[in-house]
Amino acid sequence: MKLRILVSIVVLALLAAVVYRVQQQGAGERRGSGDRALAVRAVPVEERDFPRVLDLPGTLEAAQQVAIVAQVGGTVLRQHVEEGDAVAAGKILFTLDARPARARIAQSQATLAGALAEAEEAERQLRRLDPLMASGYISRQEYETARVALEAARARAGAARGELEAARLDVAYAAIRAPIAGRVGRISVRPGSLVQAGGEPLTTLIAPGTLDVRASVAQQDWPELAAAREQGRVTAEVFLDTHPGARARGELVFVDTQIDAPTGAVPIKVRLADPPLGLLSGQSVRVRLLLGSDPGARVVPEAALQHGQAGSYVYVVRGGKAVVQPVTSVRSLDGEHMVEGELRAGESVLTEIPQRLKAGDAVRLEPAAGAGARTGTARPR
Image 1 (cartoon, rainbow, N blue to C red):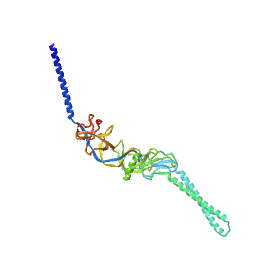
Image 2: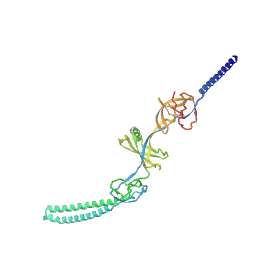
Image 3: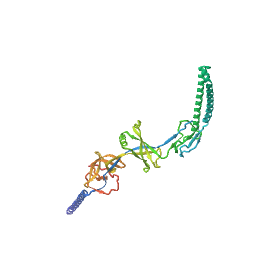
Image 4: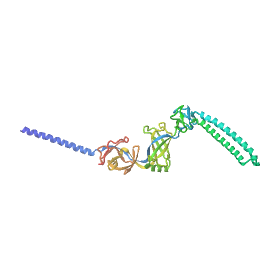
């Protein structure tokens, strides 16, 4: 009996010791956590000019591009170029069968010769009748008939001369020449094909060098672009999503005078200067219109901007503590935000937010290795 009581006392003593030790450890951890500051990364708020831009989708096209269309109908006899060839202005691209036009030249020459002969004879006849008319030996009607015959012969000669010139032009048009220097595009005909005057293009010539970008500005963005144009010329940057290095600069050269009804936008055109080889006619690109800048803007990285039910905010380090500061994002560009709110230039804003961070917690800044991604999304509590 005494042994059982002794064992019970020993067990109770051990339990009490264990409980006491656990309580002491918990209290120590709570004291330690209260004194330890969270390590965070932060960057200073920048004060600088923030660009105002419009980013738009666009399509590249050659600034000078000519569709080659036959001016006369006929059969293609020869094709003098191949697709992709570089040609000089005036080079013959295609030769059409000019034999029908040459036959018309011969026919018109014969008609013209006959009409000139008739006119010459009618003129001689009228000269013979002049003294007879003055002496009264012939009637006025006879004289007028001779004069009308002369005018009719001259008219026939003029018509024949016009037909001759038209036939000569058709012969010249049978040699289809390059109106500009450029590179030959896809050829849609081959020797033996029958083409019609003013029909489908035989090929396309694209002048080298200058490229344009066609895009459209939404109605809600138009006032800002119009205000920028009043201040002077509007420049632009053009780049490919798939090739960031293929970038070019240009200038806004055309703005339509009315809104395009189907799209509800204003068509514009940007002309590029010295486009890189990575840009070709027909490619889809992004065009960035540079409309100016907002001076003295407060700028923070995107990683610093948090979002809650009450709006956007950042964590600012003030007095060694993380303070929630509400802000309003005015505009963003390339991972940075121009914000409005009670922020001072140089203040540190957190870019990596620990999950357990609460508003007012003590924090310790670590050296920033660049704007990092968020490790968590904290909410003010």
